[in-house]
Length: 255
Image 1 (spheres, helix red, strand yellow):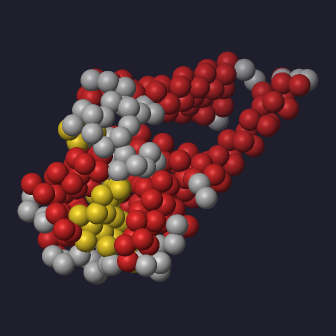
Image 2 (tube, one colour; image 1 turned 180 degrees about the vertical axis):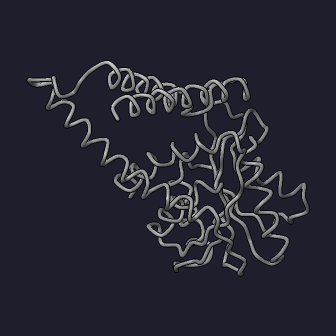
C-alpha cells in the first residue's frame, strides 16, 4: 500500500510538471498561475519519494505531529477543493436565454490594444446575446492594467461597434481593476442613469469565472444570470485551479 501511494504521488507530480512545461511550450510565456503546477508537482514528487523510502511507523518525536497536521490540512484542502470546483463546473454549463435588463461583460487582459483570446471569447458570447435581443443595452467593464495601451472597456466597445452594435446601446465602465470593482462600478453607473433598483443582468464572462462573478454581483445588488463563454482547452486546469483560490479570497475579502 505504501509503495502504491508513493508511486501515485510521483505520477501526480510528474503530470503537474508536464502540464507546466506544456503551457510554457504552447503559449510561449508563463501564463498566470501556471508556475503553481511546477511547485505542486515538485511537492507531490517529494511526498512520493518520502512514502517510498520512509516507514512512517518508525518516525518519532515532533515529526510525527507535523506529518499528522499535514495530513489534516490536506484532507481539509481536498474537501474544500472538491466542493468549490463542483460549484465552478456546475455554473460553467448554465444557459441563460431570457431577456435581462442589461448585459454586463466583464473585462479581461488586453495586450497593447489587442484583446486576448479570453476577452475575445467573452465578446463573441455577448454579441450572440445582443443580436438575439436587439433593444437591450450592454455595459462593457474593465480598466487599464499593466501592459495595456487602452482600457479593456475601450477594446470591448470597439469590438461591438465593428460588429454592428450601435453606440447608443453601449455603456462604458473603464476604471475597474478587478471583478469586484467591475460590478461595484457598474452598479453605480446604472443606478445613476436609471435609478436605484435591483437590476437583472446577463453576466458574460468565461465559464470558470461565472460562479464567483455571480456571487459578487449579488453582493453588489444585482440579480445575476451567468452567460458563460468558453476558454482555450489548454488552460482549463490552470484557470479552474486558480479560481479555487480566487473564490476563497473573494468570499472573505470582497465586500
